[in-house]
Amino acid sequence: MSDYLQVIKQTEHFIASQALDTPQGLSWRRVPEGQPSHSLYHGSAGVIVFYLELYRHVNDPVYLQKAVDAGHELVAYVQQKVASESFVTIGLHSGWPGYVFVLNELFKACGEAQFRDTAIAALNRISAQASDIGAGIGWSRPRLQTSPASKVSARSLICQWVRRVPVSSICTPIAKI
Image 1 (tube, rainbow, N blue to C red):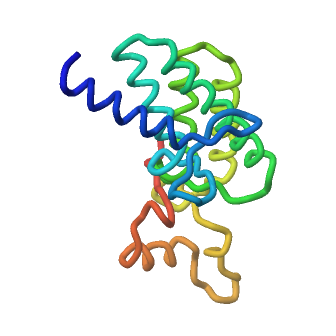
Image 2 (image 1 turned 180 degrees about the vertical axis):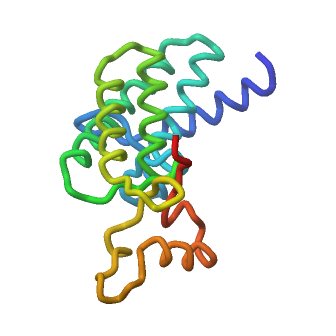
């Protein structure tokens, strides 16, 4: 076993020791004693990618099963969010595009239709919250909308705030196709 693979397996052992069993599957906390997190950056979605890549490298079905078990928890979380009226976060590492990516990777790895179907439902939710911002489409939280009397558009507020706040935390413009 290469030194790299040995370190990766030690890392996997630590990650596995931090797993939370939920009624839906596996999850991980962002910080010890914290609530489970589902994001790609610091939550279960990122751990799923780790397990999928480890499975692809060593071809051990145990790692694929851990990814799938965590995927079931992610599906339950995303389905609950799709059904709610809450705003969808658009950042790749801490929002819905990350969920879509991970669910699609799970579908490609194991073929379970629920991963594909939940990814499609999430994409539909992302699309439903998109709005025309002039030079393309974008997403902004409803609080950025202003009254017609103020004559200040949500787009101009976004542009002002982008100078002070990372774009991914406010809006993500996409060029018109």
